[in-house]
Length: 303
Image 1 (cartoon, rainbow, N blue to C red):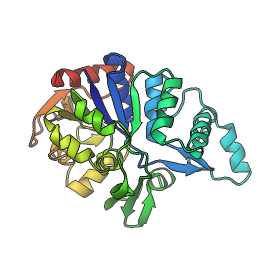
Image 2: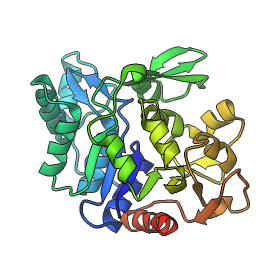
Image 3: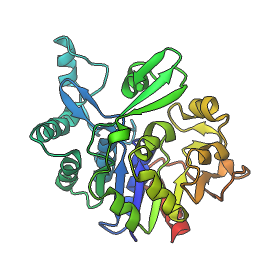
Image 4: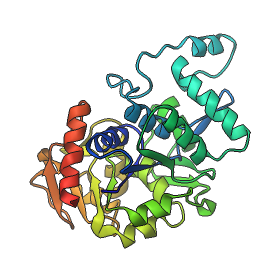
């Protein structure tokens, strides 16, 4: 069974790991968001791709919910002491990956090739591919001004209300090699329980991606990132209330209108209604076992 997962970090990385565990080696392709990529201290950082890579390789910090397990922060502390920026947390183990990526990109390798090399080095059998090798950056429009995504999310702690999103570079971005082919050949496509506005819509903004999902909508299932109308983590419930008018499965499904055939929701939302089929199960992923359980439930729907 060939499965494609559209994913950000966080909940996206968790369900990607569940799918990775539930499927045979090589059956999963994860198309990752790069809209929140940034440069820190001269290094190229891809937070969502890295979250997926660490999760699939078993290197992630499950307790903290991001970054590497066993992480330390001495290099960042030293950089701060020397006057360097320190608002974006880069751990010592994490820095090793960023150094390798930055060198490879500087030598002319595309991000997709670098990501594939990193996954192979980590022993990951599933494919992880950025949606595009071109520069794509998410900006958040708020009453206080427009900010780069990480500036709003990390430095400003996503406290500003959101009026709109801008995906800079999307109009000229081309899908990375193999992305459209993976979507066309997939037996099932899973939209991860990531924030639609910050993680999935940047993927859909790249030329050809939205059309590819629309053509396969009967084989596309999204997993709601909300439980009982509340975000498990992050500002999505506030964003949906302000930008879509509510936090029910109907508003979540509206983020993917015409692109999905069903929405997986938690049992807390079992009584909700939407304009497409709702599939009810336990969606809270607290560990690797529950992530696999959710993935298996999703795959049963698409079998």
